[in-house]
Amino acid sequence: MKIPKFADLIIYEDDNLFVVNKPPFISTLDERGEGSEINMLRLAKQYWEDAQICHRLDKETSGALIIAKNPEAYRTVSMQFERRQIKKVYHAVIEGTHVFEGLLVDLPILNTGKGTVSISRQEGKRAETWFQSLRYFKHYTLVECRPVTGRMHQIRIHLATQRASIAGDEMYKGKPVYLSQLKRKYHLGKDQEEQPIMKRFALHAFELTFKLLDGQEVNIHAPYSKDFETLLKLLDKFDA
Image (tube, rainbow, N blue to C red; front, top):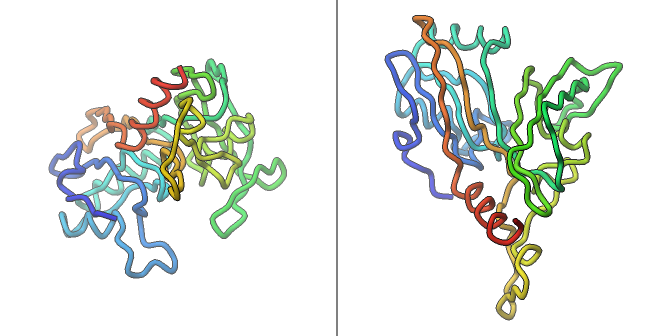
């Protein structure tokens, strides 16, 4: 995988922090057993020695990630996350046509270890996500997801409970999208194996609203990654 130039990922920067548009397939921090693998923290430290990452995105998730340049900025942003004062907006392509108009899913989530979670009303921790449908296709829907809490895999499992798994999210029963499913008379060359349009689940951290150290509010948008944009273009063309 080609590692992008870190400076090219920056979508906002001031004296205290910067926000990057994280590419998919790069972990936020060191993952267990990935000692030599590149991650966002290592890339950030090459750019700014004292860089600290303020929150996490799943390895496959693309989008807006806040990185502090100094301990004070890290504290300021972390406290806002802890107090749920940061407005987070994700976009996801889900299976099926779903009309979500301000749907609140508030099912408690239990971290079962080994990178998986489940819904547990008895043992789970409070988890709330709002959903709003943005665009409809024949077999898919583009939805806006606004998590209030920040549990692991929260958006992914909350959508799965609505029988609206994220496209490509095989952990939560989502299936990859193939062009042959959308395009009539699609032919592959002999001995060619068809690849999915996206080689990951279709989830992107689209927008963040938070306060800077001086109290000023900023609103940051992270443009879609190339694969997410390609999926939407193909759905627009062949599944509208």
